[in-house]
Amino acid sequence: MVDAARARKLADRIQQIVAEMLERRIKDPRLGFVTVTDTRVTADLREATVFYTVYGSEAERSDSAAALESAKGIIRSEVGRQTGVRFAPTLTFKHDPLPDSARHLDDLINVARSRDAEVARQAQSASYAGEADPYRKPEEGEAELGEDDQA
Picture 1 (cartoon, helix red, strand yellow):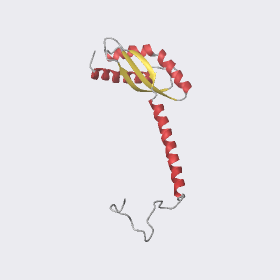
Picture 2 (tube, helix red, strand yellow; picture 1 turned 180 degrees about the horizontal axis):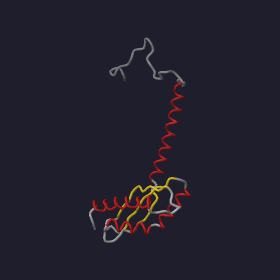
Picture 3 (cartoon, one colour; picture 1 turned 90 degrees about the vertical axis):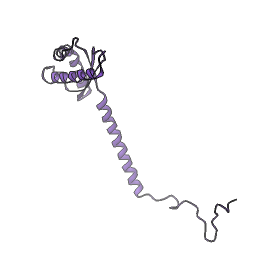
Picture 4 (tube, one colour; picture 1 turned 30 degrees about the horizontal axis):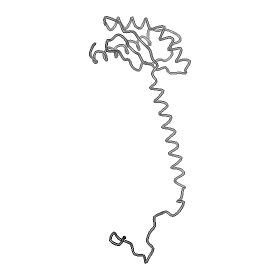
């Protein structure tokens, strides 16, 4: 086992290599606009998971996933060559759901803001259903009971 700092450095380097390969060397027409978002390496440096996002539709996402799977061997050999580790880690490509989740949360926040604005707009023209001050007050002439007078 290696320390976590070395695994993190290797993961960062793998992320750079994969992003560079996708930009310059992999010429698969199925490959869409792919962004490598994160890479994680196991503690024994044998397996690396590369997280990516694809800008576009679901069909472009599946085409890009197929292109990444077919280019996995070339990318792995380049990772092994450039990192200099004894065993090049096996690469697994996973679609990163984080941007989709963030987009969904943004949509929910926008809906909540619009509903809050609608409630505020309705509250401006609203009036009280009863009196403005619903609490009972003593009438004139009635003495207010103090703490000592209550029984």
